Length: 487
Ligand code: HEM
Image 1 (cartoon, rainbow, N blue to C red):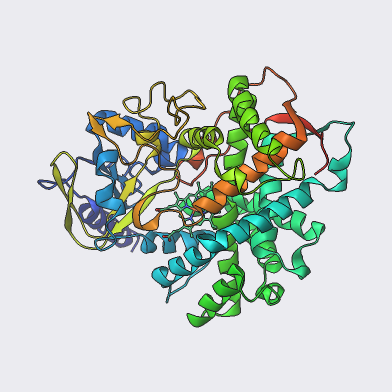
Image 2: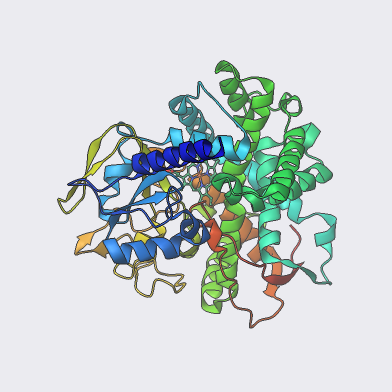
């Protein structure tokens, strides 16, 4: 009996290996399966995707297919060819892979999900006329949080880590702006949501890769449950009828989503709207604090805006629209630290046409992945000394925005891509930029903020987070701050 079972098992194993053993067919990208059956390159990919993909690029060029945990992923690293992916929503699908992640991270399944209606609803609330209104609410919330009693002490320094300082303020102000109702806006609730969210965020990449160990699974489950309790739909019934939150709840109800799934969808939205803004503000400040010339240039621009304000020091939202120096510094910070994967699923066998005329066949069921962090963002052919922070990299000599960047003699449409591009470009881009700008303006014009150790270097990035939007630091950067002028 034992030998029969062993033989049967070996038979299945051999069959499995034969069936899963794929080889490159003519006109397909170079195939690199790695040596471990089924897993392929998963371990190296998860440990440091930037390092792994750089190695693959050096070996195969700017397009190749790798095996990762049973999936075949075609990685494209030529920015001149990105339009073939980001503009194609017929053969390449954004939603399927997103649904896989939704299930793994948020235990959320939305079978009747209609991404087109959802995107249109998001645009209505986050772009155009609604944006000015949202920006105004965000400004009031940021001011109120910064003006809390503990900060009103103008003589004693307070100490914190810059990452926690930026993330906590922007998260709480963003939460109040988008999820705030009378019921859930108390300081304790805000702090509880932020603290639970940070625990959740620290396990997010492992949840996405299904690599949590038993103890981490337990922690992830209980943190998720606490966040669901804090975000339950009952809390949001009193939200403004015209608010984004009510439109989103209505959108879910129209899809027939029950209350439990609505709560889970709220957590997904909390991540989509708050998960990247704080880390982006952290990197901007970290670069400014370690580059005095850049800090002086941004402060100079803000002081001149502040002088035009009436009453003095009141934040002039309209004037904040013309800030080319700040815009360039932020773009530069994002170039160095925004590292999302742009992933699409191949819906049917088709051909990818590259900008230089090469053609490659893609197989149905595979995934296509762009990693703009490697190119264009860190590509030395496009950006000189790409590892250096140059606050004026995106400024022309006459102070206007620089948009001319080249690769292979060709002017690039995509020279930095923190927000994605094409059909699924970030809906919240303008709101995110405006929030970070308001935060930077308030902090730099009303507070003294400095590194605890003026010789501190920028912290290393946590390499396991490549692919998940904004990078996060390995450890925090100690700062001290106090209020200089009343808010
Ligand atoms: C620094 C902050 C942010 C960064 C770096 C960022 C980045 C991105 C990227 C790269 C994508 C494209 C994903 C893809 O094509 O596969 C995306 C999509 C999206 N972002 Fe953002 N985002 C930020 C803030 C926000 C905010 C504040 C909101 C909401 C108000 C938001 C809402 C969305 C939505 C709804 C999508 C999906 C668009 C679609 O389905 O077509 N993001 N974001």
